[in-house]
Image (cartoon, rainbow, N blue to C red):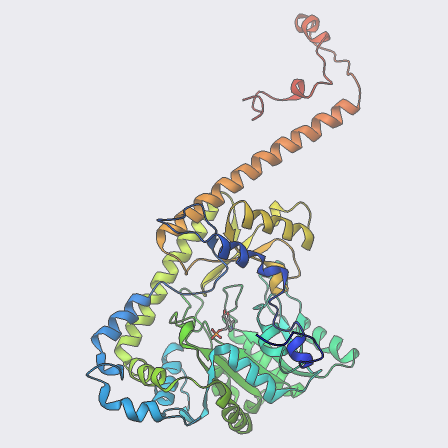
Length: 493
Ligand SMILES: Cc1ncc(COP(=O)(O)O)c(C=O)c1O
């Protein structure tokens, strides 16, 4: 290929590092790529636990597609539609696709709200949706406030092209990383004090990486805050259909339906925007089907024009229009997917509990937020990365460290467990068990050594022992570490 990568030839955005690919967090992915685990051919490889991918229910979609050949324009049953679909390029999208998507979005939210097909804007996944929303809502230098920890790629999706920044709303483990009004106001005032214009609050509900849902009261607080300050509320609900236990998922759409009118404490619906995609709930990230659902007419209109840059292929729209509008199949799929996610989550977290490792209590998503604070050398980000490197290179699990999600408390790790089969999960658990046991043994030995050193530093001791043992004990070299060990010491055994 001719030409170099000289920064003077390209734009500042193109040569900047807004993509994040050079981040040190890619170390885990590189380790996996160089030595991927395979049950049959490479059992010593790295297991991929850094990928929030749902592979647990793809068989149901495969079955549906086999029994509905008319949903594909490349089968004898669907071929009559080939020309119409192959020529379709309207950026409004196939009407049947938008209708089916709107209906499905309501079904995922338990039928408690309805969505208007005319507000559904197509995007290249939720990734494209965030890029487009940032383009529509903010100018370079403006900011969104985001509760921590948050999905790492938001830094790329929201900021790279638009030039906006993300400012953290600090959340803490002491209350399960709940988002409080105090923390929100503090972040807002902090940004304003620095002269930064806040244009939005960005939330992910259910949360990646926490695997928890936001309560109705938190959502109402956010809507009130956005309305009072005239800032946007951008809600990523990509895991809406991946909630597998109580409490139920509450969509921001429910809050808009309840408070969107002209009511006291109401919410200005023009400020509310939802990002959704089929990447997680269906496990179809390759289809690149994302959606912006905005209550603001001007945003819908602008985002629709922008969507020309990331349209969903008409063939994919055609297929999905049929599948999503099969209400009976969708209900079965959602129920079965939740059951499988719950079972996987329970197996993983109970497996961790066997060696004393706990996770934040979660009820959604494709991962667990694992607490390894007790295994850190000290409570610093450096110590977290040190432990992470051991987990990648020695335990051979590619998990994601909390700092990559901007978590302010070192020692938390996101572990994905829906992107593998049962057997691989058991191998991963076995590795974690051995690692934790060895770690505890090493810790005990180090503590004993340190204790022995402390005693030795005190010099020889004179004990007053009962007469019978005195003679034997008198010449015991108590400065020797071995002499200080109890019979239960693992080193003695
Ligand atoms: C919270 C969140 N938003 C957006 C995305 C990107 O999804 P998509 O594949 O639809 O672009 C992900 C993927 O991991 C995610 O976890």
